[in-house]
Length: 477
Ligand code: 2HG
Ligand code: ZN
Image (cartoon, rainbow, N blue to C red; front, top):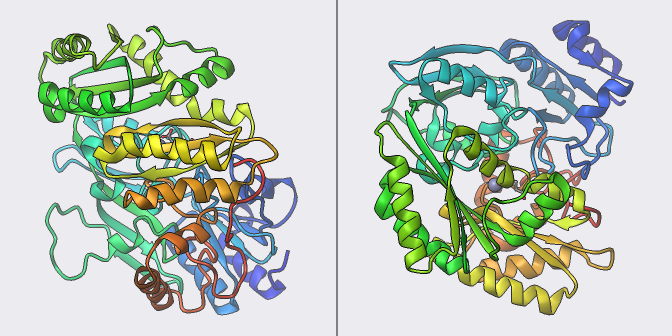
């Protein structure tokens, strides 16, 4: 623990005994990510309950030159919210700032503090017959501040966009402790720079999100979920086109799941798909205020079977059957973790190139990393594939990354579609983005955080050299 005593006293004065953890096992949950891949050593954990307290903590640390790592629900997959091993970084956890300040069903907005759990915000919207359409497996623990700071994706991006497209207003604390309140609820606001965009997806490296106003949508009264097996990813894409023709913009999710993924789910979660064998599966959800969703989905399935775009399929007959189909998809990550060592890739390519990407990445891996197995699944409707590679002790994570990301680059894709850079992909980002883009990013960082004290070593390599991985960790990721 290396916060000088006078600074610690100042933090204690701001937070009181309930708001500061300085030692013991209570530090542990804040020190490491949930997959236990990025262990760190916090100097202490500050748990402010108000924006003013956040600002006071940040000011105190700024004056003392102490780095801060903002943390929400700690559900990230790239090690972006945990401290490094130096024992110098203060973790600033937002989870005590959990209030929903307002739900406005007419204006269709919700204002929530950073530490509010996503699921709690979703439920508050539902009570007003509105939806907050950010939907992720981690929604029971992820917080609004983290979701905004990570520009989270999830399964509804196809219809509603990433988190960015739902943020109307933000309150942030800058690295020097200045509070900027932009908690406006305006649908249209072209007055000056739209500065909030800088902080959305910045992974806590430019400022700390303390509250947000998010857009809500009317709650659809009817929804339908279908699972189909398809002969190959190309057929899956054609099925997407067919579904769009039949279901139009009511499609809210179009997920691709490989057979390997379902085998892992069966082995580790005991869940089995209710339809026949196939190499690839597609989970489709559509929702609307109008009825007729089920009939439209039946038409999609019938036409797909007739045209051999689908081999088999089922349209859920009840909410609970729909939940069972979704459970297959939602258990993939956890089942993969139970299987053992894997190297994750959260990539996107132009939608129409997805089948060819899968093909070429498979060929490249078979040649460059024999003995690996691919667990591919993800948001095909967004061109986003979680191309996770199950590896053995003999495989080196960095070279597996390189093989997959080189193929991604050939298709003009991205090395992170939704999980972000965190500390895990710092080296990969620098490798695949142009010098001009990296220089621009460094200029932004220097402008807002000249001392490099906010979440150092995340997204960009730290200017002080602490933290930040330039290659993949060689253990299970
Ligand atoms: C998902 O889509 C998440 O389920 C996690 O983004 C993906 O485990 C992964 O790689
Ligand atoms: Zn995902």
